[in-house]
Length: 236
Ligand code: FES
Ligand code: FES
Image 1 (cartoon, rainbow, N blue to C red):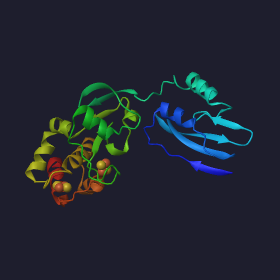
Image 2 (cartoon, rainbow, N blue to C red):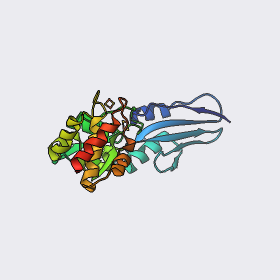
Image 3 (cartoon, rainbow, N blue to C red):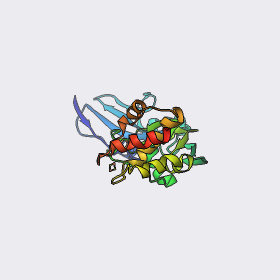
Image 4 (cartoon, helix red, strand yellow):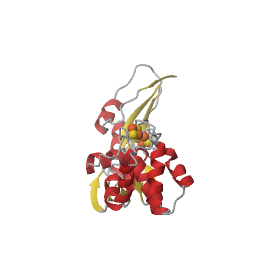
């Protein structure tokens, strides 16, 4: 048996899948794999052709069919109307404002907050690999990397960004200015929200606490000592 695997871009439409699934590659015994978007997830569809049997396997429930039409009918009737669509509707409380928005299944919280809320304090220094901390936001009281979270997982979350910290803890921002914690400033919002989350939880945080909480924030300009001085200033 020969095999051929055909990869499609992640955003392949269902129509593209149906069209491609109809292609028969030469040979008498062939298995080919297709990718399609179903319920917002990328899934594989397997079509197996043998000398005597052609099977069409549902990408969602693995049920087998002997014709593409039968698979299409099954998919339309069973899976296509499931509530998990491509644009879930979620509610976020961001810097005190409650918003109802549509997001895509693959949209990160970082992209959502920047593009839908215009909160450009949220940065990306590591191309979304979760390695720099410049995209940090406070989610339900915890400092988290917004590039590593899907927006659709945050339904009902209370979120604070550096824009919010400017209002909720101006003393911290003033201390950052006083101690010149920024050089280029690109990393600074990520540090500030992380520090704010610490102070919310532990108003009398010591130097060890500060060093520990800031361990995941990277500054290419090397401003690390200034952050500690600024946060200690707010604590004292
Ligand atoms: S962009 Fe670097 S940790 Fe999120
Ligand atoms: S101030 Fe430039 S990266 Fe931190």
